[in-house]
Length: 323
Image (tube, rainbow, N blue to C red):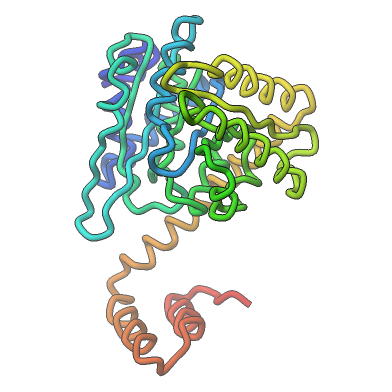
């Protein structure tokens, strides 16, 4: 696997490169960072779109249909589909590729299912690096399908240009249970399954969500999130959905908000990596193992508060506890 192969659009090389960046072996981590450094000048040119929604809303079906339409329009589409990892077994189904069968066989598409590995935010631990690799391989549209588990998914908004929330018909019930934080982060909202007997309910849900948005603060001062009805099954409304997604990027680019968002995301990525590195380094220190076990026992026995235990551990490690 070489950087040249990835730049030439070799999908096998791209898949191997993503496997490399997902590895936790020290030697692989070093090799992955060297590869990313080489490819970095060839990244950043895609439209990064996050697609989220509760399980069963039809994310994979919509991506399959929309991806085929985008390919017909001359685009190259990469899909990073994150499957939930079991907190009990540690396993993941990784079935998204099978649900996008038509898209998966196209040369202009690349689909990579990855386990979330219990990472909060509904995305994999190395999704950001995978986005860069897909961009270097020439994919001008990168779709990130998130787990769909609720408010913990808000992290995906920190790594994409446009955040799309898919909703189900039946807004009367949905509005009671939907997580406000997700709606507030949405750049575009789409009520899926607007077909057959669901059509009238979809239109009603569209109106209800549009009304609800009036009471929420927009994520951007230059963009009011639109709400529309679509059907991944019949393709109705998908062209309009993509038009809104493109319009969002164009509007944000014209106002300078796009570059500000990308810059803020890069800073957030930096701090996430610092936090992750400090946490992993702290846990790996041999001299802290016994202290950690003792602190956990003390916290469980309620003989000390977690805050005080953490402060004492940090002090023992030679780090200044937070104020």
